[in-house]
Length: 220
Image 1: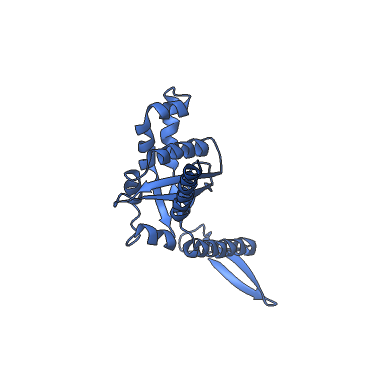
Image 2: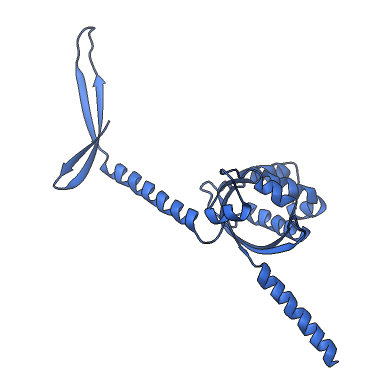
């Protein structure tokens, strides 16, 4: 039992333990102990407040943020290493389907409101996000994902990479992705991914390059 006692306007918390120490049947002798757990209670309360604050920041951030679990990917790569594969990059280069296998092992734990709008998620169902993406990513993006996997597996806490997807209408959209490993046990179980849609900027750059080429052609 946790009991709060106010002393001079300050909170003091005690853990009350009641034990029956009777030695003879029919008799009742009770021992009561009280342990001061004020610091523990205050620490727990602070953790709850911090969790609520960070969760609010995550949910209401103006940019999309996803929280994913890569722990199954780590276990899969561990198994590859144990089987005798030492050069993972060369192995993945020669077995590109293994990258797709690893991609499908990623589990999306939660996404914030902005990301839900982008993926058009309904009722918190994130299970099909990776399934959707794997069939729309370009080869260049899968190569970048390979580098992400290797970087995270080798202990990097931060990774940045560009990506592109081909929409259902055949159009290409370009993104910049920022990845942070916040796993408490270094098991890749908590990976945060934020991304920015830079399609308009990318298309503008391509248009400017084309205009420059056309201008050079005219002057020549």
